[in-house]
Length: 362
Image (cartoon, rainbow, N blue to C red; front, side):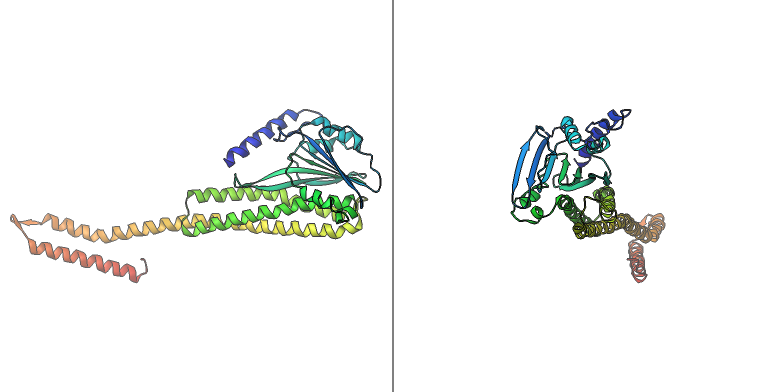
């Protein structure tokens, strides 16, 4: 089920990427796999005293009109309606390549400062309980002087806690500027990483228990699944360190000095997540060696038992064969000789078992 889902998703994405080959830069084509998602727009305007929220499917107004000291948050989910994305780009004078990156969900996390706005690409990670694996999708953020625009492939309810916080009168979000809202959106995306990393840790613990008790071929498949997942997680998480570091190190007119302490907190979180992921990757590679060692040891134990059995029966087979040639003497059954041979064979077997035990082979 897991492999089929990822194969279908990758096939759809690859097919759409091929359609873009040869087209001019900035050509807007959605290359993701959320093709059934209807584009919706939420527009929140707030200041210290007031808050209002509108939701619609088409842009019927000039979204750039923002009365000070209001902050406007435009949350767009569903990227299939290209005209909506084009209109947003036209109103806010976004670069065509920015719009192209927004519609290409397999971008590497990055941050670009265009002077009058900052463009960030992040990866949202979530755990799919049905597939027993994580899923990721792209979230694009744009920070302007007094506005923030967020683009999601689908409505995941990820930002619902932020809507709740904005509606609280005199809350932190209502007091701070657009840069703080930009930080809050990044922070809630990164917080979900801890959930995914925790699930990976639980998987590792379960597989380690099986490795110690009785590893089987399915255990090897699970190890390779974890190995692949850790590689994909690393691709999504490590570049975000560069994004946060760039926000901290490089001066930007849209980022206030009071936000630096919050950015350092995010950087600490992503550093902890990266550190955990690296530890888990080392453990996963160690589990692969442990599995191969367990299988090898089990094979050695089997060969040791078979070798001991063969070693014990070699002299017994010799005596049985030798006696078999002389079992009947002058057409008379030699019962006493038969008893002697059985006793000798038993003594030999017991002595060999004692020797193996003394040598600690058994």
